[in-house]
Image 1: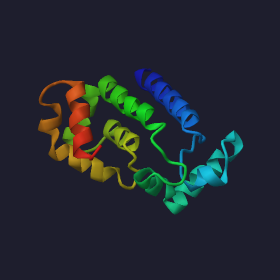
Image 2 (image 1 turned 90 degrees about the vertical axis):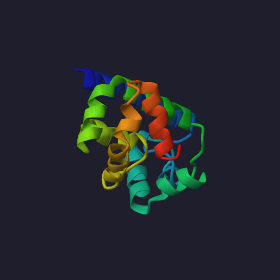
Image 3 (image 1 turned 180 degrees about the horizontal axis):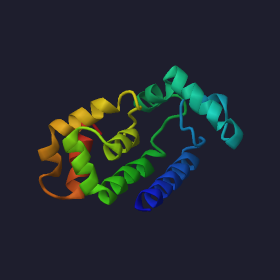
Length: 148
């Protein structure tokens, strides 16, 4: 039940971030330019973003309708996820696999194919991230490790 509730909160946060950033639920990228914020076309926008990799490029370089307007909400979603799942996340990071670290990787913009890189970085730095037994310290350390 806790996971379902947290997922609903995170999805609501992303929806709000999407509205604040002038793109639909598929996010920024080429898809947001080709298919405006219309519920019926968001699957096409997401497919376009995934096919061309424009979302990752756009987030990195601020192109393709990607800007910092929605980033504050994404940052808060990451922080909330880490706080709500701190112990489970620590366990998954130590093991180098698991649903909590995989979901966190997605919040940091990693795809299912590249989430292993994120997991590996966190696993190598497990003591640094979780030694203080503080969710805020974990957020700060993870952000530093991934360059945010």
